[in-house]
Length: 490
Image (tube, rainbow, N blue to C red; front, side, top):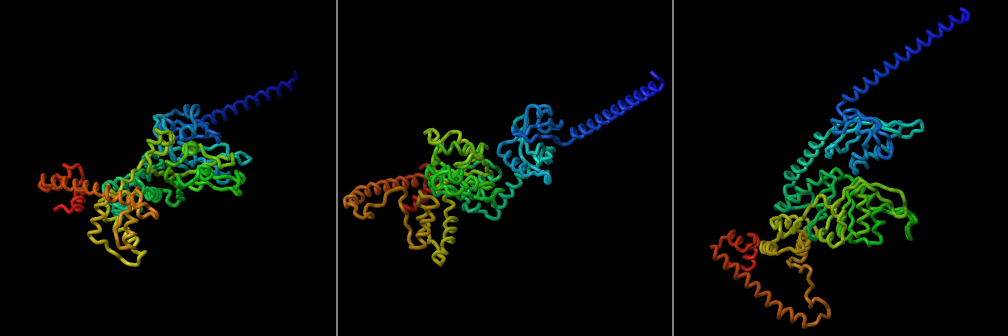
């Protein structure tokens, strides 16, 4: 090898050695930067993450803050869990809608939702993140930071409930929404309604016909965060079974004969608001199955379409039937019953809240006096009739009696769930009325006289002490007073 070639080789060797040293220095610096970034991320008050925009929102990276936030290690979060496994289904829908609206120009988002910890409890999470897009503009991943705001969120919910309670106990002492009353049974209803407004859980309202179940449902909506959103009422007993699926889920054009246009169903109409299902005991089993899937986050498809839709609605149901017995009889699915029966509210019958009678009478007298154009006061002897009546038709019957009094200036109580007297029907046979008057009435009179004598004996035995007498007879003091007034016992 010539001296010139040897010199060139030596220079080349020195050059390669210098390049290697440079690369080594850059690798060391890169590792130092990565360690610094990792250290910064691990020391953040929360969990930094990268999440793939796949079916389950899989974690690609999680900082060590995962341990403090959820009780899971960062390795567990990346290898064994995903957002879809930790976030409840009702919150997933909201998050999905926000992510779907991200664009390369509008790539930042903020979310508040719940995530399940290693202990099985749900924590309120505040997420601030950024979407990462491909050159084609497709969302491929999200970077962000999760922080725990459970304490702040619980305080916020408690404060909102307390403000609601104070507002209605001070400003409207005997009223909640359109529900009127101050008795203990109705105050329990007020408390349960206020509790229900702070959650998204399904509510079911039980009660006899005429007790105000729909008023309670509307009050729940009006006091909730959804008060400015749709309130959709559906009477399940008024829809033919053949049309129920279309009414609830909607249909597309051509789905069946007469479907000339696309039609939105009740579920989508109630999106972001409240869906009130009255007489839910009338819902057929086939629809219970499909609605259960919707409530569990599975979505639904309009009739004639394969597209899956989701609707964020608050479910409130009402019934005057014994749903537990319907489950035993096979008329209602057990899983559906438990799904809708999360927050039960019982509307008391009017006979159990007679302390509210004066307030209700005054309210409805003022409300319906405008129809007659004059203000009318109900005389004391009419009030006594009201107090001695058992009101089998509840508040609805009271409204009917008051409107009748305002119109005809007379008080009459229509028999409840009993046929009208035979003489009121054209062509009724005379012997029917004879049997009614000659046989039935003496029996009634004998029973009334027996009750009167029993009350009189009890009063004398207890020296006319109303409380002790009522206790001995096994009735309330108010019921005893009504009976004394009814039989004019002195």
